[in-house]
Image (cartoon, rainbow, N blue to C red; front, side, top):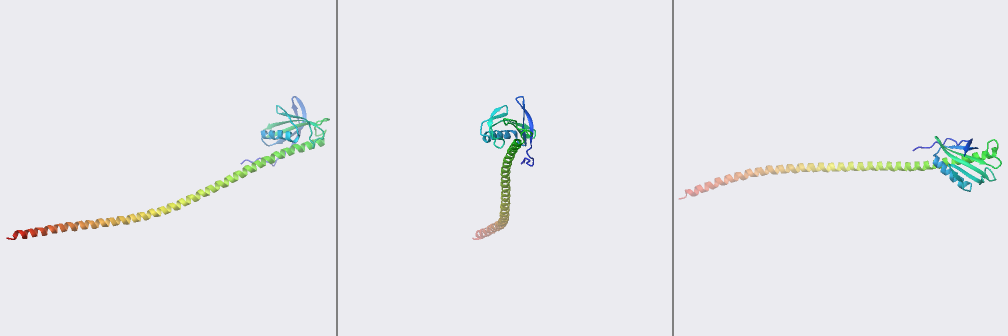
Length: 222
């Protein structure tokens, strides 16, 4: 899991930007997050916080007659732009207060309020990003715990299989012993049978001898 570094602050500096060829003085905050996400949040911020629709022209957002109470009690004209940078995203805006443009030197009070607004916006995005990362980390933790339990269950199944194998081995060994005893018994029966066959043959010989003797006596009778 990759965690965005949040130890960084949200620096706001005074920066001029040419809008349609006209240089304008304004404020810029640097946010170390994806530009698409920042841009979408900034557009939502413009619509919901300032109670009006903005005009979008080639990445430049313009709002007229907007009241930003923390900055001015009277309507102002706002021009803003979101740009991707190698390290994140910058949100720039220029505010026409009617009698002056927002400036650190010319309008220090309004500049301070505006600076706080941009910093609060950046902090809000960082908190949202952290919340997403926390949720992802919690999901990853649950997944890891589930995987751990699966591995443990697998180990338990393997242990049960080992015990079953031992029992089966004992049964086979007992069966082999029983088969060996049965084989010995069969071999003994064969030996007995061979002896019985020898005895039977001897009986046949004896019976023939006796028969011949009887016949011989019969032949001698006159």
